[in-house]
Amino acid sequence: MEMQGSRALAITQQQAWDALNNPDVLKVCIPGCDKVEPTGDNQYAVGVAVKIGPVSAKFNGKITLSDINPPNSYTITFDGQGGAAGFGKGNSQVRLSPPEEGQGCVLSYSVHASVGGKIAQMGQRLIDGVAKSMAEDFFKRFDEEMQRQHPGAYAAAAPAPAAAPGPGTGGGVPAWAWVAGAVVVLAAIWLLR
Image 1 (cartoon, helix red, strand yellow):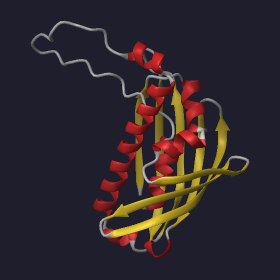
Image 2 (cartoon, rainbow, N blue to C red; image 1 turned 180 degrees about the vertical axis):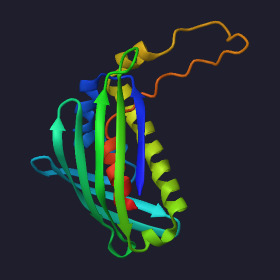
Image 3 (tube, rainbow, N blue to C red; image 1 turned 90 degrees about the vertical axis):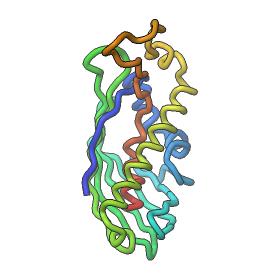
Image 4 (cartoon, rainbow, N blue to C red; image 1 turned 90 degrees about the horizontal axis):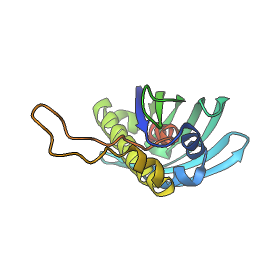
């Protein structure tokens, strides 16, 4: 199973990098997460509760960071067990880069994962739907946390007040400034799958 995407963030590349590497931020932002704890150099233990269709389970797993190039990119390898519900393992590449124009940064990710057990029997559509929903929930939580921690970045990214839009123009949509933990969030999502 594969998932990829990118998001524009209002915060700087360094702020995004710091948030991606902060277990406290990730724990707050990952839906159902009750644990993100360092276990060694670039290694973390993660605990996440998830429900996919009629299957509810608590997944415990480990995440290892490699190919670390601060504040630009790294690879996350993950392996999680959910008892009778199943298992998930795989990797995710995460990259932070400057935007083509404006301020902030862009977070890009790709995830490759495999799953087994009852979760795998739920059907790809259901699993993909839950994974996408969890990713969006993570990004919303991350955005809220980054707005709390870096209000100035969001004030600078907000569109300037304008008169009512004229015909054929769209209303201003603020940059989706969430960040980071997409990496761990996506890893956690795949642990659930």
